[in-house]
Image (cartoon, rainbow, N blue to C red; front, side, top):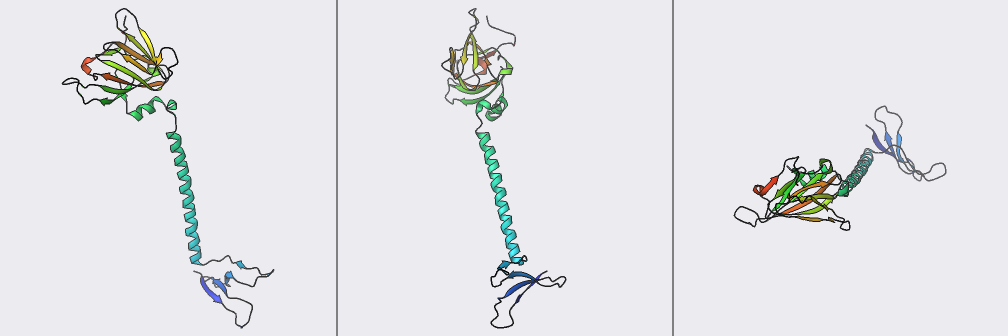
Length: 237
């Protein structure tokens, strides 16, 4: 371990100032100057030696460690903030169907697609039936047409996101099938962000893109006893 001493001039009036030296305690070699103080001149400018005290070395080590830690923290913060903002700022139109399904907690629907009930009115229509219910519903374009089905109450479809949706309707009475487009562009013919389906009217839908997210509201509320779904190969007349 190095030791330290101070050399003082032996004569009064000398132009030399005290010099702090660092001695090598291991091999006894000549002292190495820690900090040399000389009268400034061309030959002897005021300099700091290469040898520093343990206290100074410890202080410099702590300072450098803190600087490095701050740099690491700052870089990590910037990277995480950028990643978070990029993810949060991603338009829903650029999301996949599976991302939307996970985000909304949707589950498989027997008609095809995915759904989640979001509201069931506590107000009762009768002793056993809610006054109204609402769901999210997502259908992927790759699924094709949903199955024909009908309910015993008025159902209102609302467009939320994704591609437009074709809604096919029929009374199955020989009058054929009519179609409406559920979507955001109200200036396109036969297109609306809302479609009303009457009680017991047969219906099926098809996404015109990768996926479509809609909502449906049923009043009185949806009741499985008033729900009918057709076989996969059935079509109304």
